[in-house]
Image (tube, rainbow over all chains, first blue to last red; front, top):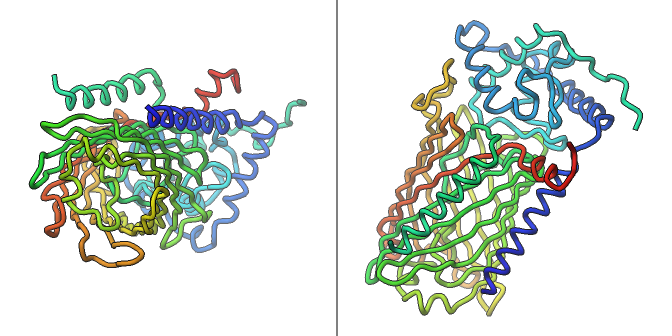
Length: 153
Length: 298
């Protein structure tokens, strides 16, 4: 009986952690600041990483495969078409679309852990490159402004 | 219907019903390990619900089936927290709820490195009848499990467990090494040590253009090895149990992951066979859902 009560207490604590972190979703003003910090990470990609070419550029299946991977792993945070969501910034922004494929690959591999984006090196390299190919293809759509004027709180 | 089937069916029912109720899900890319950990944490805000089952052969006593439900939540991109609820059926004896565990894993480094450390802290409140064998440590040997449930369940363990997880991913291969140190807070039990090693690789590195269930990239195969390393006063492999287990995970596009592992004892102190399987589902945005329920962000 004691163990059941203790287990229940831990479950409640677990729910509390979920709630505490779940409610930390920020207001839009902060979100744009946060997005800016995430975009700034792209600039931190080392030269060697930027210089890498996408080995999937000529692969006829890469775009479709990348779209599937995006839907499975990325759309939950970045939106179905990469337009951005509550948790992840827009991938249509010029800072992403104008970035070298190698820089996007570097971000996928390393994540932006302190800003909420996990590392994706658990996806094998070819799959990350397929994702890069798809993310770059999203640039065909009109890009959202990067830092629109924040609404007054 | 036996208790064994009732618990199994209840576990799977809970998993299924929760997954159906929380409709938003995402395909996981889960590792095949059941005992070892790699350095990948749960994505922030996501909840993974898992049911695992272990059939263990037991010499000089009855075989057993142990099982656990696991609720794994990505609190942040650098912190994953989990709750386990454990139980077991020893055939021809009884079925018991054996306790719970609260586990936390922390990623101290921002970027990927050749070797990636993860710090692991767990509190266990379990009875001596717990047989899930999620880690093997100290001088745990097969004979310890031959004692009847009625005796084993009298013992209560409040245990703190620490792990250093060192994991590396190179060209699709994952290699991981876990060092375990645990201390039972009740009684004068010394620090106990153990280890787990793992290696795994997807059957294909490129994703297919079409979503499919049986594509090779959905399967990750590997092997894990784990065992005890004695305690503070008698460190080493003597009087310990050791296991080698081929493992495979099947990540289905329908958001479910199945895992299978057949562990074989490597010495006379080990169980001959530990047959494990698990089913899990990842639910994205669980934190946001909870927040909305409590009137948070709309």
